[in-house]
Length: 142
Image (cartoon, rainbow, N blue to C red; front, side, top):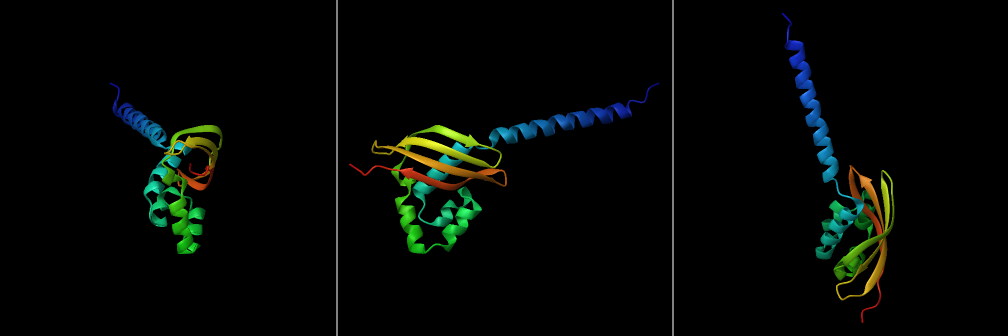
């Protein structure tokens, strides 16, 4: 008679490995792309009245800069943020993405239809893409 206990143990290990592999695959699928992370930042920035509202979306370096900047300057920056323009039709025209840094060149339209273009640098911190820098060329309102 063959003892089946070692085989049962192997079966349990195999099933556990399938669950672990499946969980890792789901985690990778649920991770945001740099563009998705930037879109989440824009949504938050469009409503932000304080720098703290942006902290979950920005890099540690950017966060430190905002914390050290004069409060009046930060308030001006928040009011003038490109996110306040309610960007639509955001398209990536060029991108360079590696394991920990992404540079996106984008085009979009402002809420009132003006064309705009921007360059966004994202960095990966603790497995999540964060805004490190963004700059937009926005035409003067009509």
